Image (tube, rainbow, N blue to C red; front, side, top):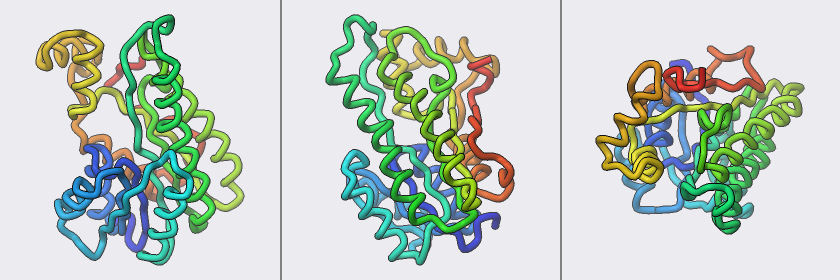
Length: 252
């Protein structure tokens, strides 16, 4: 029970990584507030965890500051404090060469991925108890890149700067801030990206991406959740401003 009596908030909480992380945090003793856009999806996610007193949910758009602040206030009101925040909400945009990328797509991706993470960091860190942990979900393309993903890669690189700056600002309070960099994960989000980038059917697109990964497979979502627990817990108590890459060797 590495997170006994700890309180966490997760944006993108109804998605696969958010939900798997919530399950893993609850299994370690934490109470968790799930935040996402869809009330039905949130209710189903919370119910699937099966520990009602330890899980609550709140609808919020991470690009809306008032809604993000309200979600943090609801978390503190419901559970009595805040110790862990996982900025996990994100979108991909479209696969397109930079010379053909619509500026509206670029702006939308940065709004959700960067501004959304910044707003969670702003309000979660203000409310967080000493010794807490902020985890910002970037991507393997936050430390690498590839053709046709300018919006997504730019947003994920920006999150490294956000995490490093916040880590220096929060260190006097004993609050740690780290970025997480998953490689390809076996979930619907990743499969949609791979189909768009390769133009191939899902099974073939998956095989193509597997061929890029030294460990020759996608991550299971629970493997990413285990990294979230590590960063949330005292197991990583001397890590801050770091980039934890969980990518099967894709970035080496």
